Every structure is written in structure tokens, then in C-alpha cells.
Length: 229
Image (cartoon, rainbow, N blue to C red; front, side, top):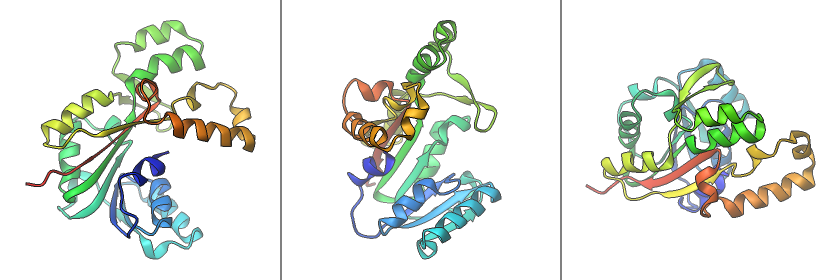
């Protein structure tokens, strides 16, 4: 879904892309396969080892560079696009993180921001977990626990991050929803059926930028540009 959304904003010619906290390269590999040159930055050597292995397996090692670093410690650079995907839930100051991301973009370059959507938390609790009490509590709770890294994260909304981007001088972003229906379908085994999954993917692509579905998607995806100044 992220790849499809970004394809609306990235030129088809080879671009220099920086993937902040890019982990095992899930986004980077797909973009490199399109001909772009992607630098993955992550503080975890294990994640970068996995990213290198994925790049090798896809014969994309010449288009993937891995850098072990805290994303806030990188010296300024100029890329055509910067990915800040699933970073904001883990930082204390999203504005400072997005400001840092902009220091790695050329003027007019594309900034892609993805994060867990706070509006989705009550729906996940009520529909998937069948826990209306937890859903009620989630309505006004910006904190949640992630099973992936077994820690608390901060949930944001697209509206909040849009305001933060505006404060940084960015134009209004394009807003997409990711996993608009997928995370509310409780039959995970059904998703292993290729025919069902293909139909689900078509539905997700159709709903990605439609109101009101993007507002309740599990993830929000905002794409904007660095101002010329």
C-alpha cells in the first residue's frame, strides 16, 4: 500500500531515497526494485543484517545501502525522498523528528510519513478483540502497547501530524489510509487464500484515499514536500 501511494508522488526515474528507521528493508526493497537507490538507516544491527540479506536475495545490493545510526544523529544531506514510516509512535517529540527528516531532503523533495492511527484503536479493541470496555478506554488514550517490540507507543492522528507539518512549512499533505479493512477482518486464515487476498488488496487500494475510510484505517500515510526557501 505504501508503495502504491508513493508511486503517485515519485518520478519514475532513479531517485535517492532515505529510509529512516527502515528496519529489515521492507519498504526499501520494493522501491529499489523500481530502480531507486535507497539508504536504510537503523540503530539495530540485527535489522540491518536482515535488510542486507533481503537485498542480496533480491539481487538489489547495488541499490541498497545500510547505515547503522540513530536517525537524529545523521548529518544533513539532500535526498529526493525521505521515508519516516512507523517512527513517530516511538519518539517523544514528533515535531523534532519530522524537522530532522526535512534536513535530509532537497527543496521540493518528497516526505512520506506513516504511523498508527489513534482513531483506529477503539475499532480494533471492539471488533477484533471483542472488548467494548477497552474500546471505550481507547477513545481518549494516546498510549498503547505494541506486541512487536513489547513496549508502549504514542498514537497520533493524521490531523495532528498535518498540523505539525504545517508548522514546519510543508504544504498540506496527501492523506491515505493503509489497512482500511484488513485489520478489522478477524478471519486471518481467510487472508491466506490467494483469491480472497487479491480481492482484499484491490479493495484496500480503492479505499486508500477515500473519505471517510482513510480516517479509520489502522495506519495513516501522509505525503508532502519540503518547502522551497
